[in-house]
Image (cartoon, rainbow, N blue to C red; front, top):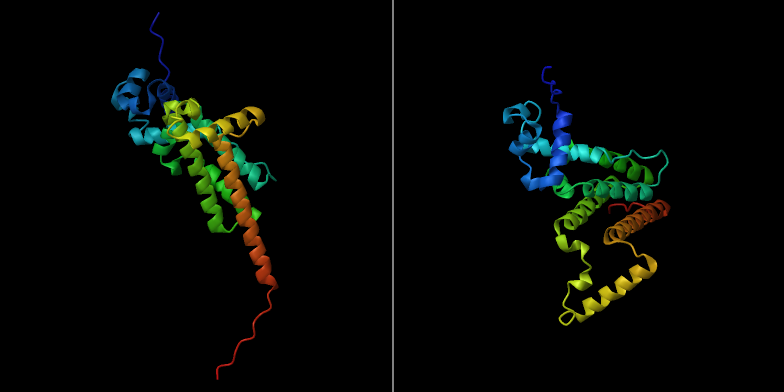
Length: 231
């Protein structure tokens, strides 16, 4: 019997294999040479599908985020949408090793994250946010989510409670506060730093929207000032 033919290589297989390899070696260890070896092909063969490592990173980030993205329901509120979208963005990055580093290294305009930006802007504009506020709010939410996830994945001590890493004799007030927070978490299931920060962000956006709406209504009720004649 002849040797079984190997299925043809395509871009989807290259990207899927690269994501699997990312979990083994991390972003620094992921090279075109290593990927070619994993696929059992020569380096030049990969360049038929991926022109360079940056293109590979872009494709990997797109595949990672697209798998977690969900379009908005028709009448979803902007608060629910933003919270759920940021959570899914974070979950996508946490689903693989160095996920946040991968997204940070990618050209975001070439990834599924742009769909989230597009849908988020539509929802915020529909809710009454001015264009500038809508854009800045979406960018802040994405940067916050990326930053907290990046820190969580980069710091091996993040899973260790802060109170166990701190010198209580040097920092008694910080130690006391951390202990109180630990007790509060245990008693009431206090939110994680990510969830707490996201709640603060959304609350701030709501306050700003209310202020803008109140200012617009007040301006609309003002009586026009009579023009003064030039002497």
